[in-house]
Image (cartoon, rainbow, N blue to C red; front, top):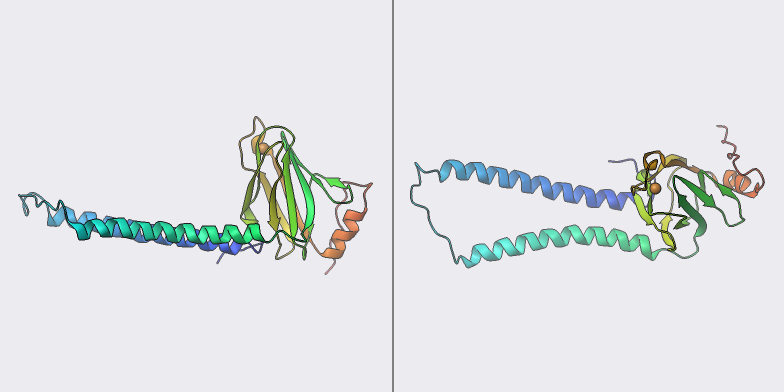
Length: 212
Ligand SMILES: [Cu+2]
């Protein structure tokens, strides 16, 4: 249904669909009930109100049904989150530094760049740190967002599904140029990435795009 660029996006989209689905059912149900009550129990047709105080069955229903709905919504979200956090071993590690107002990426061999390049087939662990105030690392296409706080090493695991260029945004208001705090995430073929990352001197060179 959606274009998902990471292994994680599908589970986030599923949770979103479930919550939207439940909300639509509730909205329709409540609206229909309200309209029905307006006609069925208006003053002309129903001048004396009935008291339903102490109706145990009704009370059980309105406690149990919302509890189940909330548990279902929580469970799907929790399950997706657990998957994301459990799978942290043997990942390729890249350090992400946020600052007012930009991003810097550092690869294991010491190479740095202002645009994030990652290999297609590797599971990557991004270690997030801020050089100043609080930021938030957000890749909408991957459905991933994580706070970036100074003195903390928050992390994010991602496994791409396709090559492409995706937006990276800061999702935590961090001052005057917060709205300009964008960069790109390039997912490239492994050999292109290896070529690019091994050139430590020319830090801003882009990997050669594959000719098709
Ligand atoms: Cu920011």
